[in-house]
Length: 109
Length: 114
Image (cartoon, rainbow over all chains, first blue to last red; front, side):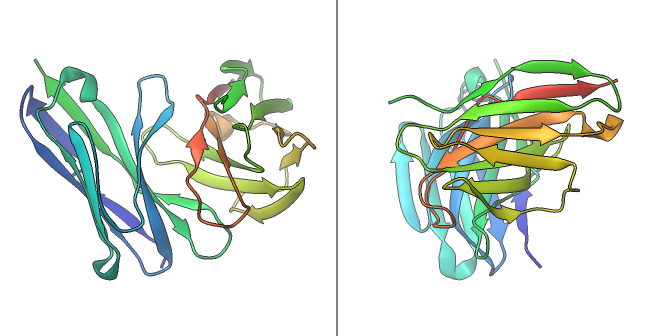
């Protein structure tokens, strides 16, 4: 079926810790994006990463399309990193984004 | 370059009423997609508009309808509101219809049906 699965569902960190979020996606889904949903609901673009590795400050992402997974790395976490992280991929037919269920990250001071 | 904007930000409606939500796409983008996000869930695709025509639809009933205007802004209309329609409605802007280009989201409209 058409699937995007994220793990873990919840993550609690101390400020300064590192973390890795995982996204597995099925064959019919491609061209992954990672988002951070802020407390007001807006989805903030983190990475558009069909394949390979990208870095932006303390965040980086890697997608291995042949093995159907993507990873989001957060280093030296800060309280402002708290929120829900979604990965989403485009379904091959129709151009719609299929979202995972999200990882809720809580960074404690 | 302007981002994606949605209005209103919050709305309370009574069951059975009709509602219209609005979205202005990012400058240069010709495609708008709408998503519904229930509490604690990931967003679910409602439909997509490309060059003023519906270009794909998710598993939503016909009382969910939309429009796209020549300037690529869009409206989502929901008739005969039900309590389960209470959700965050998100609009995404991208370039190229079903081409897999990066999508950018507005801040959402939080709809409460009472």
